[in-house]
Amino acid sequence: MAWARDEGGAAVLEILVQPRASRTRAVGEHDGRLKIQLAAPPVDGAANAALVEFLAAALGVRRADVELLRGETGRRKTVRVAGITAAAAVAALAS
Image (tube, rainbow, N blue to C red; front, side, top):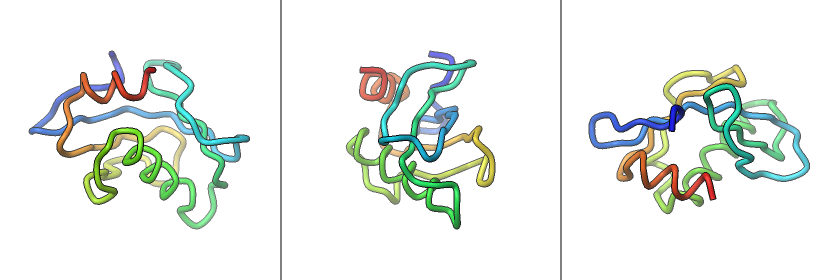
């Protein structure tokens, strides 16, 4: 997938978030990135926290293993997930 790659023993994911959705879920690929709808509003880092929590739960890793590399304040984010391969991340999130 274009939105997932392996880098230094971790998976790096290119994500497009849609805050204030009806529920939190991955909805598929959009514009070369994985689109994730978040129920949280984009206020005081709530959407970023919800994204980290969702990815950790969906990928079966600790929240501390999910690191936001780029896109702190934007909808386009780059996330590094330690302890998982890009292929495993794709399998878990694309289903």
